[in-house]
Image (cartoon, rainbow, N blue to C red; front, side):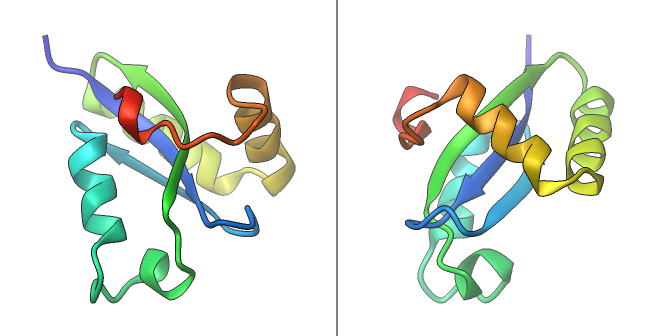
Amino acid sequence: MRHYYTYILTNVHHTVLYVGMSNNPKRRADEHFKPGHYCFTARFRVNKLVYYEVFETPMEAIRREKQLKAGPRAQKLRLVEGMNPRWNDLYAIL
């Protein structure tokens, strides 16, 4: 069975939170972290996966992504700190 992920990426100082969705979060994170990739994540030096949720359908993951993007920063901070209080990079465990 294929899984779909909604995730939060951040930078070294945790000042930027980027929310995304993918069926392969490692590959997608690699794309975000790639040097010369000119987008939001490159501009703000986003380099760490700190939160994710797993879903069975892409629609569930997309719905959650939109919900998190529309929500306040404080909500995202609570999610990260609830799952990953030390803000460790979770890239390796996926």
